[in-house]
Length: 278
Ligand SMILES: Cc1cc2nc3c(=O)[nH]c(=O)nc-3n(C[C@H](O)[C@H](O)[C@H](O)COP(=O)(O)OP(=O)(O)OC[C@H]3O[C@@H](n4cnc5c(N)ncnc54)[C@H](O)[C@@H]3O)c2cc1C
Image 1 (cartoon, rainbow, N blue to C red):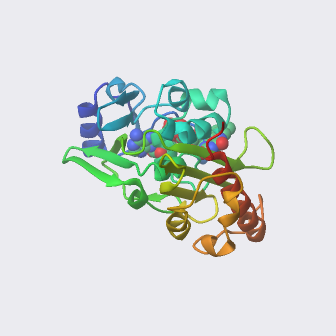
Image 2: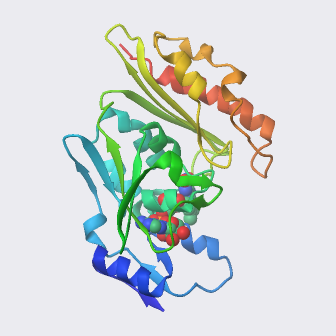
Image 3: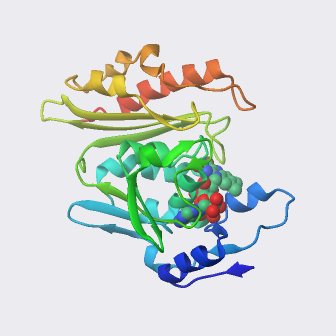
């Protein structure tokens, strides 16, 4: 069975009465099937115009559940979204960016999902809808493990919401892969750093992905950065102790030891990226 609802209302009713697998851009969905036939029923949400696109509201920014990576790249957004935009440019290829959605990336919940660290650094919430209504939960609680989220089978992710608290903060994304393009991350880092007029840090959020079953904020480092001056060389404040919360694994892409080392270097470089130039 295959459904292609035209409205959000129709979509949640279809999920409630038939269950089924949500299909969005399909860029994780189809590769994950391998040689298996497509599951049934499929609820293809790609015609739901009402959850496509980004809206900028006075107190928050809403990224609709069908927003593609290309739309993120092309939308004018505050500076604190630079990390998300950089991540978007690094997801697969142009074709993948045109089809793949940010919501699909979060719901798939791969430890190597490039969208997760920038959105965690923005302290984003996710909005889930079903016939029972709508609920909003912080992204940091939504992803609970490797490909595991708190989404119930009858729920759809309708939006990601970012409160406009740090619009002017500097933000960056660094990804290490085995080659430059079309590559799954070995380690990645997103950072958002807010400073005062003297370049002293008032708030810092630093997140490492691909080095644990889910991306991790480096809480101790974030605390240590507050009050520091964000000037050239300040990345040297990072020590391995700041990364003790990570639990990287050995796999075909890298050893755990290499990942830990790479993560530290990426965090240092991310902090250097956040130094105001000129
Ligand atoms: C060649 C290639 C390269 C890639 N490179 C990268 C990369 O560099 N970095 C990276 O992070 N990813 C990469 N990906 C993975 C993929 O493109 C992204 O994760 C993409 O954002 C997934 O979005 P989608 O809309 O295609 O999701 P889909 O494949 O349609 O869905 C993915 C999962 O999320 C669920 N889902 C989707 N949307 C919703 C929703 N709104 N509500 C509830 N559940 C939903 C689906 O049921 C499914 O389980 C790559 C994939 C390919 C094929």
